[in-house]
Length: 179
Image (cartoon, rainbow, N blue to C red; front, side, top):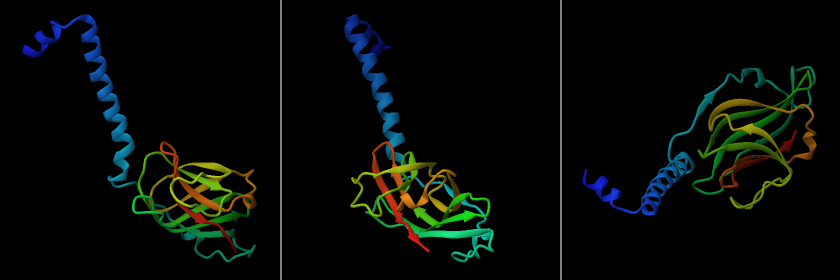
């Protein structure tokens, strides 16, 4: 009860300042944890069955899918890195699908997947270039797919970019190589 009696002895203005300080400390601590914790906590793992995409031969239309692009994620630094492969395929129905194959991408807050007009990036502080967002990165480890919007002109884009929205930094990218 000693601390409460001490606070009660303060003026109303000082009490308001103390309460404001305590509330802001709690809020900033929670926001800080949300922003920083993904850098040292394990990420999401996802392993979808990608066997339907195994036998795709470039430019062969007899397959259910046609392979259009491949790429490999690169390491920027020890905190912003990726490995594994991506493929972009076109289905007979005209759907574009981005395939993440055996990827390991550094964990981070609010990671997004972009198709970018740039083919390479100079580091984490580089801008994303002209891009379209494919949405949240579904997992940072494993095998999975993402749909590319049907109205996308895929030839306008040169890389798949993993972008950290809160810090506006590049985590990794894969340059698209036409097959």
